[in-house]
Each structure stands twice: as structure tokens, then as C-alpha cells.
Image (tube, rainbow, N blue to C red; front, side, top):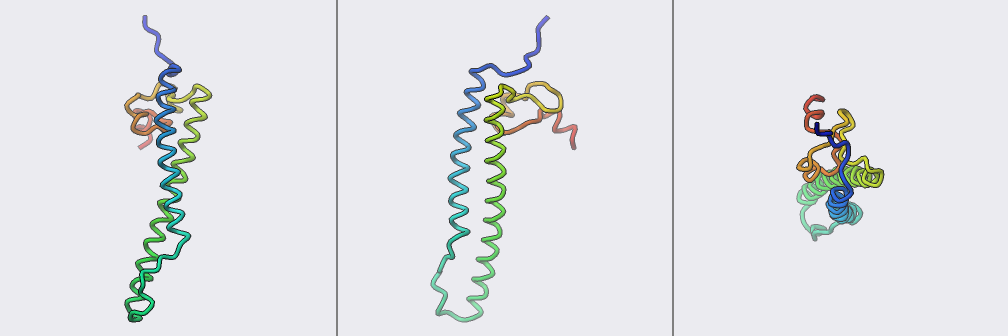
Length: 126
């Protein structure tokens, strides 16, 4: 009789930690870039052009800033989720589905390292 594993071993957890830390670093860099684009008003040299062109530029810039703000918000949420995943690694509860209590597959965790639901549980939600 084989006993089903109820948690990942320390070696697996360290592998996941390195994946998460890499993604966390990338996300933090992305967030800095996004926040930088939100805090600086780009001057494209349209000050001396026609009024209608300036209005179009202002509209395009506003749209771009709104999109960047949404991206920044999503990136902040992603960073928080990755940080929570690191806490679960430290607690040795990482990779355990919060609905079924079974291990989430390694393949899923490598793609979505902050996952808290197995594919089975995720499908049941929909």
C-alpha cells in the first residue's frame, strides 16, 4: 500500500523557491518601470503643433496611462501572491491544494507558482 504524499520535500520546495524568487525579481522590475511611466509626463514635442493634434496626443497618452495603471495594479497583486507563496514554502504548506488537500502537480506550480488550487479544484469552481 503506497501512502499519498501530503507535502513536497525540502528539495522540491527549494526548487520552487528559486522559481518564485526569480519571478518576484522580474515582477518588481516591471513594476518599477510601470510606476516610472506613470509618474513622468512624456513630452513628445507636440507643444508647438496644431491644437487638434495635441488633443489626440493627450487622449492617447491618457489611454496609455490608464492601461499602465491597470498593469501596475495586476503586477502588484502578482507580487503579493508570490510573496504569499514564499510564506507557504517557509511553512512547508506550499503546493497543497486549499480545497482538496492534495498536492498540486509540479507542472502546474512551475507555470503558476502562486497557485493554491489543483487543476481538479479549479475546474470544479467553474
